Length: 243
Image (cartoon, rainbow, N blue to C red; front, side, top):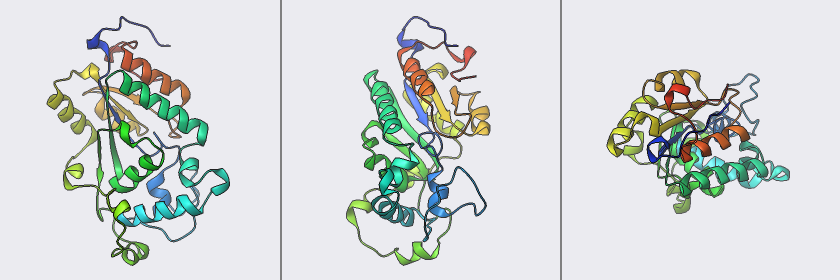
């Protein structure tokens, strides 16, 4: 149960680091686009071939899928984010964090390009100051990736990441570096993540919120993040997590 404290500036979370897959989204977008794994996995959206594993290939394929698949449900990204109502809830949460003067960053093991494209199509991209992830062919190239490698699509190419966005080693270390650069304390930074191992490592650095079911942030967790931005949740002694 949440406890309220005075809304001092020092109590407020000023920097939010969000994972993307199964945290902001309700499914694993990267693995869905790549066709991973082959066995039944409820975190993967079943999509038709071709699959893609490179940054550019996933950007092109995501753009195709969002125009061609799951149309009766609002498109691929609508399904990946839990439908229109949940998309609205996530967008409202991001807007509330920004209204408190907080900075919002993505840190994902996925690829920058498709993450940026997804956020752009869902009208969430302006809320994020930076996106850290992988770029290029970090995860190799499939036949589709090679097929579209030379395609020229300026609007989509603008979504691709730059080298600096991939120059990080771990989420806890990135949180530490950003915290130091911005002159923040451990209580003013939070990592929001569905991977328990990432949360365990980050607990020594900053606040954490574990998305336990790995099916995307729930309405109660979205509300708790808003409270963190207002200074209504105590510091790391009562870690920002829902039990």
